[in-house]
Image 1 (spheres, helix red, strand yellow):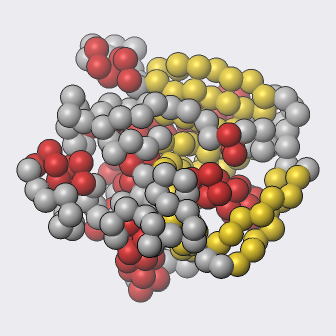
Image 2 (cartoon, helix red, strand yellow):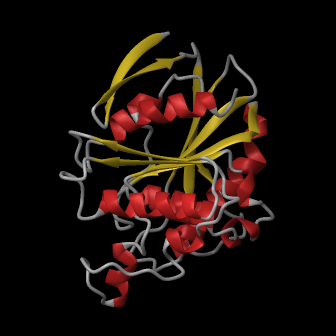
Length: 268
């Protein structure tokens, strides 16, 4: 057991982290149908499962990497390793080779795979949290708020134990706008904006952003907007943190410690 400090909006928070002694890693598991013929899907639609071998009924974090929906590779944040939870890291198709909404559809299929398969790793399907940084945070919100993506696999999005986007966009993602030739800077909200699908019965949500003076343009404000809308429509378990002193690229590390503490509270 180790104690760590995280600086959150000017306050010092003590986080307790429980270590598991033994872990195993299963790599490059395909989460799509064996009959798939699309070579790019076959290449990209793979995940890794990092799980404790001396524990059962543990929580699982499904982690989507960042990279603007145009780059990035699955990898486990060091801050999430050996903390008593499983971490499933996911690759998905990328723009411009793939176009919206294929990357979100991939993310949903990966989460459905986790629901169906984590029991075989001794994890609990009732303790699945969906998270990610930047573009990964956007994907987490989309599949958790727009129930149609997981419904395709007969999974109720409300069975997700919690959504934890780190610096995710809540408006329509800028890469989706780029694919359409729209302005990078001017906000756009349509059916591909998580905020459009805000609903009071959504899973518990932890929104984390970097310092609003150091983040990408309006990233904190987008998360604050979603927080305000969720509260206004009656969502009972949404929390927003601004991590002062951390920019967009560095915020995910301290956010992971905050995430672990929040997961612990939501799995008691």
